[in-house]
Amino acid sequence: MDRAEIARRGEDAAASYLERCGMTVVERNWRAKNGEIDIVALDGDTLVVVEVKTRRTQSRGTPEEAVTPTKQRRLVRLAEAYLAHTGLTEQALRFDVVAIRPVADDRALLRHHRSAFVSQ
Amino acid sequence: MTAGEMHATVETATLLGIDAVPVEVQVDVSSGIPAFTIVGLGDAAVLEARERVRSAIRRCGFDFPGARVVVNLAPAPLRKHGTGFDLPIAAAILVATGQLQRNLLESAVLVGELSLDGSVRSVPGMLAQARSAQARRLRLIGPSGILRYRAALSDLDAQPIDTLRDLLQRCAETPCPRIDAPAPRKCFPDLADIVGQSSAKRALEIAATGGHHVLFTGPPGTGKSMLAHAMCGILPALDTDEAIATALVHSVAGADETAALAGVRPFRAPHHSATIAGLLGGGSPPRPGEVCLAHNGVLFLDELPEFAPSALQSLRQPLEEGSVTLVRADARIAFPARFTLIAAANPCPCGYLGDSQRRCTCAESTISRYRARVGGPLMDRMDISVDVPRIDPSFLLRTHSSETSSVVASRVLEARQRAISRNASLDESIGTLPRGRLRQHIALSRLSATASEALASCARVGHLSGRAVVRLVSVARTIADLESSADVLRPHILEALGYRTWDTDAAA
Image (cartoon, rainbow over all chains, first blue to last red; front, side):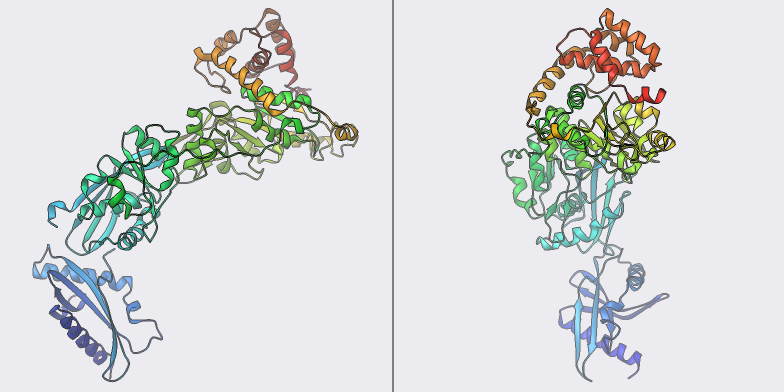
C-alpha cells in the first residue's frame, strides 16, 4: 500500500465516521491553487473544515502533531478561499482534525478533535 | 445570539508609574473563520492572555465562542503591560456571548490575572488600581486581596472574587464587610541596647525630627548599622496620606504593601553592589527602585564608599527633588522618593584611621581615593556627620541605663509637631528644603541676633556654599525644636556646625 492509498483510505474512514456522527459531508478533496481541503462537512449550521492525518507508526509522533502551525495557517487560507468560492461570507466555521492510526488491515484507531485550532 | 448582542465593553486600567490609567476592553464576536486576536499595543504578557482566558472560561463551565473574537484595548496608542487584563477580557467575552448579564459589570472596573483553572490572582499595582477606581467612583472587581485596601481608602467599593465563576453570583450581592489587616510588627534594635555612642544617638534624634541626612563614620564593628536600624524605632508612624503614598510605590513594584498601609515607615538597605537601575528604578515598564521604595522612610547605605560612584551620584537628584523621573521614549514617569538617607562608612579602607588603639595601615593616597569615591556634591548633602568610635571594652561590659527608643520617639513626635505648625504657611513636609525661597525659609527659622552673627562668621571662615548654609540653618532649627525654643540660638547653630565634619576635613 503506497502513501496515497493509505491517505485515501484514511479519508474514507474519516468521512464515514463524520456521517455517522450526524454531519453531512459536502466536499471531498476540495482543491485550490495552494492546496486542498480533505473534507468539508456541515454540522448543523456550522461549516466544518476537516484535516485528516493518517500515520502507520508513532515513531515520528502522533498524527495530530503533524498538523503544525504552518499547516494550520494554510488551512485557514484554504477555508477563506472556500468561503469566497461558495459566497458564504457570514458562515459560522470550525476546524476539526481527524487522526487515524491503522492497527490491522481492516482496523484503525480514530481520534476526532472538534475545533482543533483557530486562526492566530 | 443575534449579531447585535455580540459586542461588549468592560472597564479596566493599566499602570503608568504609580497611576492607573483607564483602559476600555472592547470585545467583538463575529462569525467567520474562528480566531482570537488582541489588538491595542499589548506586551507579550497581554497577548498570552488568550490561552489563559480560553482555558479559564472553559474550566469555569462557560463556553468559549467558536467564532471570530477580536479584543481591542482602548486607547489603542497607549502601551499596555502585564496580566491584569485577563479578567476584564474574559468578562467582556462572557458578556458579548450572553453568558453574563450586561448590567452586572456596569460602573465597575475589573483587574486580575486568571489561572488556567479560572481562579483570579493578584497583579502588581492593585493599590493603584483601587485608588483609581475610588477616584472614578467605580466598583473594583478583582482578587480577594483588594479587601485590605478598604481600611486605607474609606469609600472604596471593592468586590473580591475567587474565580471567574464568582462573577455570576457575587457581583449581584452586596459588598462584604470591611476587614482590617493586622498590623505587622517589625523587629529593630532599641536605642537602650546600644552602649555609649551618645553623639550618634543625638544625631539620629535630630535626623528623625527634621528628616536630615546622616553619615556615620567609624571603624568596623562599632554599631553603625545597629544605630541606623534603630532609626525605625524613633520615627513616628506614617499618617494616612503618607501610608497610601508609600504603599502605592510598594504596590506597583510588586512588593508587599501591608506594612506601609499599617503605618510602618519603610527601611531600605540596598547592598553596595546595587546598580543605578536598582537604586533609582528602571526597566520597561519602569519599576521603582530602592530610593522610591524608601519614600517617607529611611534609605540606609552601608559601606557608602563601596557603592559605584555613578550610583552614588545618581542619588543627587532624588535627594534634592524628593522624586525620581524616568524618561522613556513614550512617557515620562515620576516616582516619589522623599527619604532620610543614613550612610555608614569606614574612615579609610582598612577602617582604623583615627582609632585610639589600632594603627591605620592605609597610604594617604589610598585614603583620599577612597573618599573621592563618594564625592563632594553628595557629601555636601549630608547634614549630620558623626564619628562612631570604638568603645572601651570595660565600659561595654558594665551595665548601663540609657534612654529607650520610645522616650526618644515621643520627643521626636513633639518636635515634629512644632515644626509642622510653624511651616504650615510654607506647605512643605519635613525633610524637604525650599527651592528658591531660601530667604523666606531663613526668616521662618527665626534666628536670634547672636545666632545670625555666629552663622555669618562660620560661613565666611568655613567657605560654606549657599546650600550648606541653608542646610545648616535647617539642622539648627530642628535642634531648637527639640529644645522647644522659639528662636534659633547661638548654641543651636554651633551644634549644627559641629555636625558638618567631613567636608571641613576635606577642605583642610
